Image 1: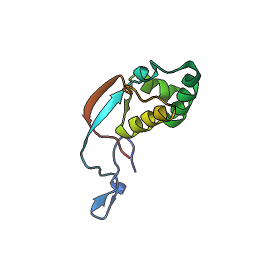
Image 2: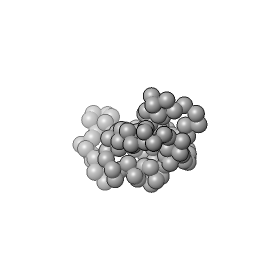
Image 3: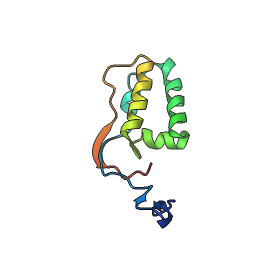
Image 4: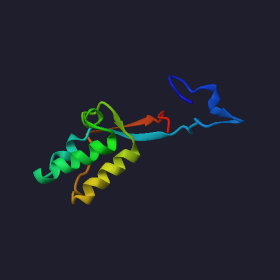
Length: 105
């Protein structure tokens, strides 16, 4: 249905299955700050869980270094992971921006 564009076959009847309501998201970039106060024993398990969630080593480091944006849903998942490990103070990502959401779901 999609590639570099949304193909005409995506339109079914009077609606397009790829249509997405315009919204502004509070995107986050980078999560070095999250790991600043992490105990050594928790570092590897947290990183491994996030790597699995985000899709592997390369993707993880692109998000970690702020090269890719984290959606509000991804942010919530990562923050909840840290909370489950007992981290509750000052859970913030490195940078935030309000952007139009153009990501196809």
